[in-house]
Image (tube, rainbow, N blue to C red):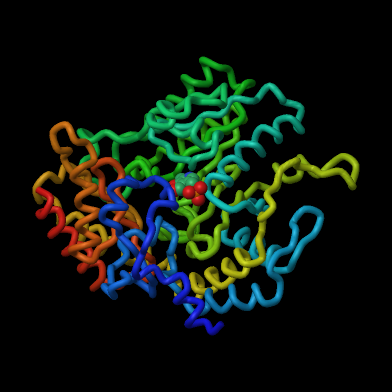
Length: 449
Ligand SMILES: Cc1ncc(COP(=O)(O)O)c(C=O)c1O
């Protein structure tokens, strides 16, 4: 079978049955009546089965930072598949895995120099939480079992992640299986922060709530605090100036581990390799996924500081030090894709590019202020969010229509959460394309007024 004919075999330009696939985080009935189908992609664009080019304002799901179908990454995946399709990571290793871990560790600040691989952001979060709990066990402080998250935090869909996350629907539908969590307040306050660019001035004091939580539970019961440096999925909430630094200070004061969930903010989204670098704050662990290989092959991981790794490296040499891992941890294809994506990031200076484009991006997105129903706009790095007023008794309907019509009528791909539109284009975006996205968005916002 030629490459061309094997492609045709799964070409869904004429879909005949949309029933079997239960789509995740999707209004399935609506989708199946009016599908938004994607056939292929290249650089800044998706292409529909009928050949329309749709500009990607969301880097897929905040992940395709190098743009789509980059030849270098495709070749690396193809070559790796031809050489070594799979190799177990339990008690065995392969060179792409060690090379990928080293590349990622080199990008991270301070002594965040060990990498534990998994396959998604959710697994990265659950892995980091488990490492935190196990770390205190091997360090003789097994009473430290409490995990502190934040309201409006999104840490994926595992039971650990939804427990420390701060999303009401998770509590409503799934309860919280993980006992012993508490939450910091979220950092968004429209009255104080509306239409801010970058880090809002107001809100650093909200980190002090950790003092209250410590006073309530006692530091000897608290293992770790986990936050997204910039909350992404619940509507793009940049950290107030000084907030993350304050959180680090309080964690240090009480010996609490600090975990940054950088599944979105990692790999250039905020103009630096990790947000930790932008803020000059070194957490004890960083979770990553998505942009690590530009979204091409499922991959996630946890960066761990030297001291945490060392704490496990004792006992009999033939004993497993951390009782954790996934069949596909460090999958050869994911690692090969990672190395190729990291080459592109370095050679095309994409993290620096995001930093240079930040003010141009901010100007373009903030130019939408004043359009009908626009309540707030936030930008940071190459990320933007626009809060739209909800329709009476139909929360989310306006943004849903914007997403649907954006794709079908205006050739623009965006993300939505509630009535917030979220944007995070590939880092290869040009100034003209920034203008194009803002222009299309303005039309869509008027259309759904
Ligand atoms: C901060 C954060 N953590 C974790 C996740 C979960 O990642 P995944 O969907 O790969 O499991 C996401 C996904 O958007 C995320 O934004």
